Image (tube, rainbow over all chains, first blue to last red; front, side):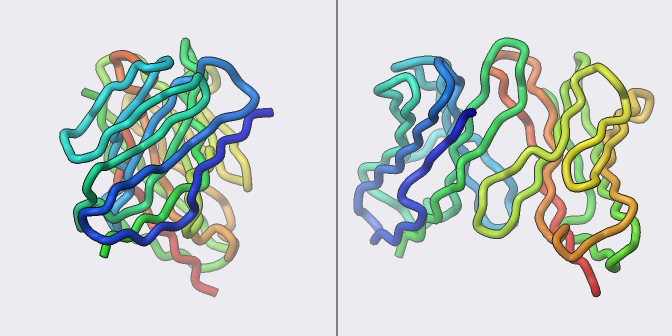
Length: 113
Length: 114
């Protein structure tokens, strides 16, 4: 069966510091991968998605970036965090093709101070 | 672009009463529709999905939803609320173009009153 991991689970970082969040999927090959941010009371915002290694699409211009160095690894980064980057970050995967359901990881709670 | 409307950010229901969460979608193509549940500080868990087979879809934890094309709706119901149903619920519709994206509603926070 498939499993999705995210780490760290929680993170407190000062404004201006760098960020690296990691997501890995087990038990499947060539998944579509997605990064979402969930701010309090604001639903889910799609940040990036990837259909393959090195292929990243950005949904919202911001100071975040994403990379997919391996088939089942998806990384969210920032060079300098802003207060507005605080939130709950969720990674999700999907089989692609005619499959639309997405499966979510446990999330990372980021607080920028 | 496809979109989902979920009215009422907070929904209160008494334990044992009917749970009804409304979802209306807009889509220019036959949609795939989903309901997800999120418990505090956890990821989203798939409750059920509609993928153009039966219009009445049964999911986990006693939930079901009915696809009504004429009303562009996919409302979620559970006959009898349990305390463990307290969570946030999201409706989602498939995006028309590419990459299997989903458009999510803003969510309903369900509070169960004992």
